[in-house]
Image: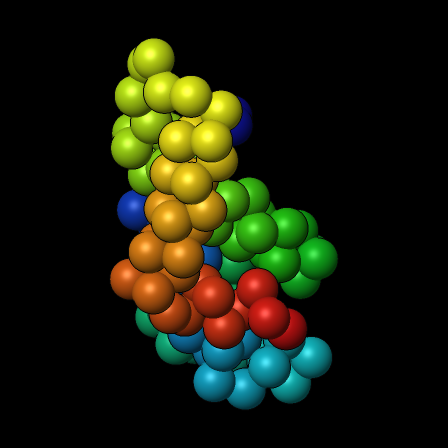
Length: 108
């Protein structure tokens, strides 16, 4: 029987990892700390992310996807290349200002 994983729990792990990585650094944050802070056992975390590297990569993908979706929604058909570039540039800066933890994580 295949266990169905809870998407909300996955998001909680990612959110918790982001906060701890920003506060303590990626190298100084253990998976046990992430699981504890998320309110679960370490074994539960490994059901979602078999390794710490998998968690790190999932967090990078999540941040990139959220930023991309926001910027894509800002783009309008018919924009010139210059306007499109400016929208992407401005949208990136705006998104990171509104998501400071994601910015701080990316800086690591």
